[in-house]
Amino acid sequence: MSSSLSKFLAAMEVELKEVWRSGELIFVFVLLYFLQGVFALIGLSMPKEEDLFLRLSGYRDSVLYQLAGLPVLMVSLVFVGSMTEYLMLMGRRGLVEVIATTPTDRRIQLAAHSTSLTVVTVVYYLSLTAPSIALRSGLQRLGNLLPALLALALGLLPLLFLGFTIANIALRFRAWAFSELVNSLIFTFTGILYPLVIFPPLVQAISRLLPHPHVAEAVRAAVYYGLVAPAQSWVLMLMILGYGVLASILYSSLERGIRRRGAYEAPVQ
Amino acid sequence: MKLRFNDLEAAFWASWKVFVGDLAPRLWLLSNTFWSIGLVAMITVHSPSLLTDRVMVQSVAWSAALFMGTSSMLWLVGHALVDARETGLMHVHMSSGGSLFGFVAGKAMVVGLYNIVSLTVVVVFTTLLFGAVPSIMNPPLWILGFLLLQVVSAGISGVFATLLIWLKRPWVATNFMQFLLPVSSGMIPYTIAPQPLKLVMLYSPVSYPFELLRRGATGLELLPVDWGELLLVSVVATFALVFAGALALRWGEKKILARGT
Image 1: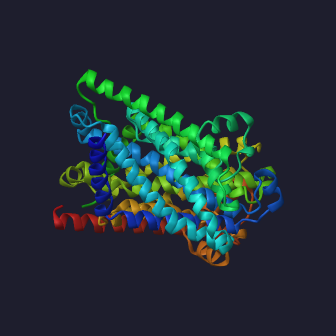
Image 2 (image 1 turned 90 degrees about the vertical axis):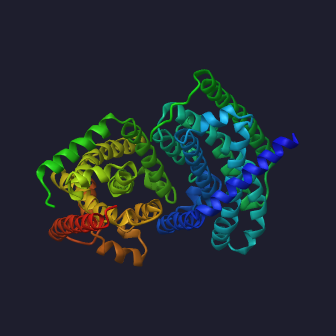
Image 3 (image 1 turned 60 degrees about the vertical axis):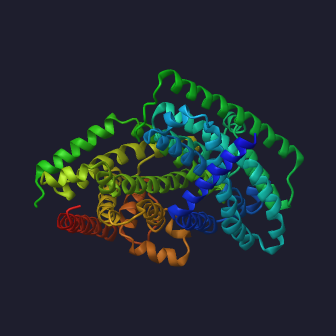
């Protein structure tokens, strides 16, 4: 156990140093801030029908609704894209076989990669989203950002597992475009930026099997009311368990395939 | 080094074969449709009754198409030189006497054709999903607007492609540009845009062909210009940007040959 922990910490140190040294973090943050600005600009420009929006969503301010859900969307899109890129890059560099032949469980490697992404996400939330929400809703909601961060932290796990699951599937399809397809589905059908009720009941039911609507709702409720409802926590726990098991099964099957064939055919983009 | 028709033809067919043989463009057709549905919902949800307005749904669907069209032009054509350099294709192309303009223009033609077909499908599906019936009010102007929009985006992407090869992180610039270009060119309708953005829209060369396309499709007159001015500025802007793209690529070509890398 302590050996696994030390391997995890070592891998984590490498991951964080790689993120820091690449110098891309600042660009990513500037880009995310810019995107938030674009979303806010569109929202603020549009004419508002607050009562109708309240009936549809349960919230009055449609701009704040989108701003509160935006980090969940961004994080999820980054997780799917980044996990797929990470696995494909490992494949191209020939690292999949190397790691498969060493005694180090690759799940430790992936856990370290995921944790470094999580750390970056929390920093992103605190430095970018929190000020935007405070700016939109006034200082009285500043205290609500702590429970919102807690909800987001809890929600990160199923989002990460989903990202890993998609990455595994994209690897089987050998197509980077598959992750783009999934990201477009996440953007559109998970009710992060608008209430799901605008879609037919079947789409709503399928969407609720994904972690996004639940994570977004938990974060949004925390931003508005400063609490994470116990029922929502249970749903999030269930999502963590479900998607964790799914990701693990898919990964094990991929690893078994590599061991059986003795080689992994590197995918091309 | 002069542009020969053979260069353009070869680049067109090479890009065409890669494009047709690849799984990605077929998947993009699906993902573009989903992005479009999402963008329409994201924009209109602030004023949900807009979703019951047939013309408005179509208009916003074309806004989403503007975003996806310029985005694919920037990523596929704007990154053509960066990708060619990474795969070693640039070296082969230059050493065989090929021109960069031909190389980029061939790819732009394929992407432009793909955009025209795929974005029409995307807008039709998006409009139908929101319960409206897709229609084209003025087909000749719609087609002209669509063609000019592709050519003007290709011209911008040509300039952009030349700039990107000198950047360490081209993806950052493209990410900014893919939002700046449509937002400054009518993605947010002129009539509701904030005053500073309205001013930017009037000076954006992409606004005019896009207005032509959207006006041809929906009949809505959003940019405060008459038909004559709209046509004139669209055509002039298109020629100017293609010329700028060709000049930029020629400059890039000379610079690359002088450096040898």
